[in-house]
Length: 379
Image 1 (cartoon, one colour):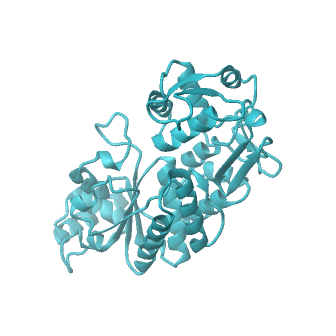
Image 2: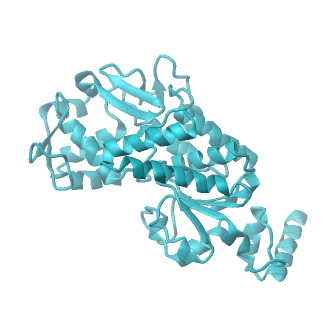
Image 3: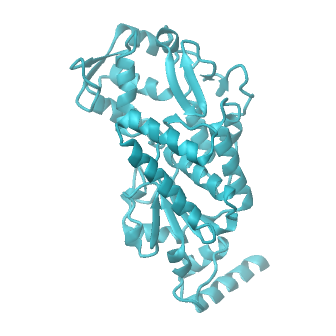
């Protein structure tokens, strides 16, 4: 009781000094954010910070508290993300994007280089990261935090705002759904946390595990619980389920797509909507999902019939299961054995008709020759 009363006095003292509301003053004391009454409005420290988010659908400029905004664009759950230096990684990611999406290689390389330059140029200042709970965002978070750790930014100068839900939104899809005023309220909420050295170290370990050439470290991150990086374990569990399963050679996403078609989805757009509706936190864009459907439709032994034939799968493509697709979905045949695979998951390259590592639904771990036993996160 004494400690609580003392904290309330500190909150009221800060309110009197800064003019902040009780909720804002309480949040900033909890996250260690300095008062700025001597230098200007209470939001000055935040306005001076570099704000980083996953894309320009989020109206950070409209909040009035984010003058310097950097948008982080990369779908790290797709394609190679090996353990190489920053310059080489930029080259690899740009090359993958041009191959996958017909993006301009030079433009992508320049974008990544400028993004990294801006991030590192602020190394003596404050950072505010605005992200979501899904796999797409969690991988971006650990990339950013690992890079900040590499250039010597201390944890106490990094604030993370990360949410997986929002009042009044039944199925929260992202920060882009929020108005500027709703975004402005988040720094004073429990979604906002000043990072600790332990959180920064965890992010660095997670980035290392993600980029390793073997998946042995993924389970340990999936089992970790962090007050600041509270969605990271869940995201790594979901990532692990993209490995081909022991029972059918399908990733979880592939299985959900096939199940949607089996349940009557007539076209790729409908199959995408139904498959992603089963995700706890949707992370996969339709472009990546259509590419996955296209691979299953044009495999040596197709799992999907796609019409019109001879065209890449898009939203209007009509789909139905082939006989083989039905057998694989029923666990009577193995997709990898039939068709092989060529897929990167972080730093792991899965190729050929023998998947070295597979997801085991029975143990909820990745099974393989060198995959370390790992605890599945508690349910």
